[in-house]
Image: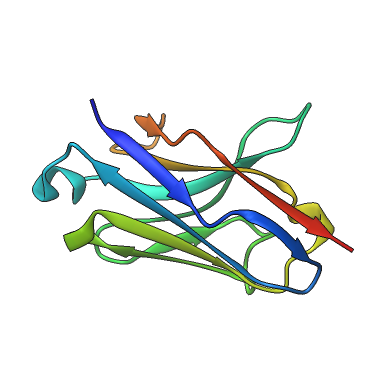
Length: 120
């Protein structure tokens, strides 16, 4: 069973930065490379929303709220991907989930979630 382990969340002041990391285990690299990896976030009472994702070739997509402030990257040899979050705002407070998807209609694997709290 694939496991996704997240790290890097926590409490930060508005305007600050955090870097989230996710590593996939129990998966060979060639299979990992077939996935689009990404980050979602969720606040209580709202649907989980896509923040950013990135394909094998490096093509990345971002939510409008993340453009210009967040950057996603992946290291295929380590089966690891990062979300660098800069200029954080109160509204970025959420539980962040890393994800892996082979298609466009659903996520195949989720991390357990890691909280990010931005205080003003």
